[in-house]
Length: 389
Image (tube, rainbow, N blue to C red; front, side, top):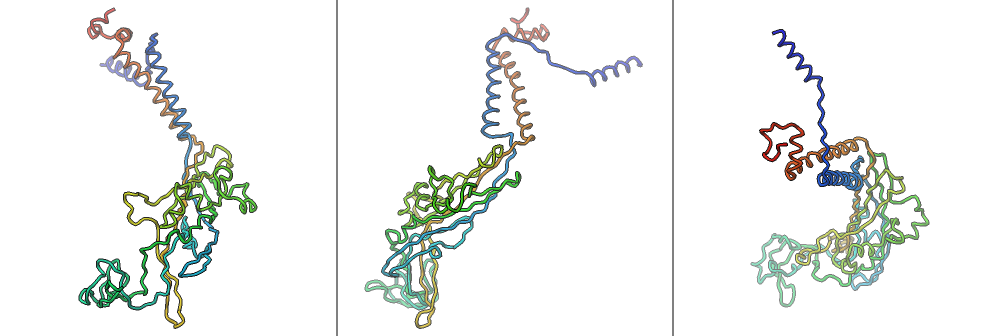
């Protein structure tokens, strides 16, 4: 029993402190060798080109944080039968004066001047037309109506009667949109976009007014992709054109244009190489097969007292283009942790090459299979009949 315990302890020590290594068998076969090197090359090329160059997997990354402010400039002179000669300046056509990373420019209007709180016939529709008072309900409000019904059926025109309503009268009629757009010349307006960005993880800050931009340059430059790609002053018509739209058509009913600022930066390079790239796209739906509620519009009113001290207003249905400034980007910088992780993944892939070649050899090449089995001293009874040497 003492001898048995001694042998047992010896075996345990051998297992604990023993070291195993693979036996290397060199096979001189051009097919297997070519396959082995081809797979190695593909893995190395994948790691070098896609992982390191395209994905930059050796870098740590951070998402951009940004703030945006805008300033529109321009004036338009209009002459209409309702308002006569009128000069539109920035406080009138930029609504609201400051938006959250966006700004709206008025391009077309349907004004309804001189409205007061009174009674008047409703605009004709399937639910507002009537023949007698019995067709109108006092106190009833139509969802798409303009006021509260009085219960009377009154003459709207020589041939049409509608229910009378308590409302701001005269009522708005927005069925006819001015063509061409009243403020179509807004395409010549310009906007200054100031964009400050930062990557907190790398303590990196920058703005789109680059180092070479000074006051003199700003007074004379306008963004042009070829001649002035870094100028932060943009002509509205140019942005709409670059988005693939016609400003005069879009100005009729309005729409939404996206100003995209790309701040993708590789911080391995000097700071001067981190510059914004601008692009433009129409964001609202423009589907000719589903053209319900097209464009962009809203209503607002200007209130005042008339000469009889009665509260009066001018209702304006405003059409225009909303410009949304969308800032995005990622920054990357070398970090040892993702480098080691991806290097380990690449080495693990390379270690699979031998297993793949062994499988091909044992599956597809009979002579090499026999050589491999005999080399590792497989029991003769287990060898295939044509593998005895």
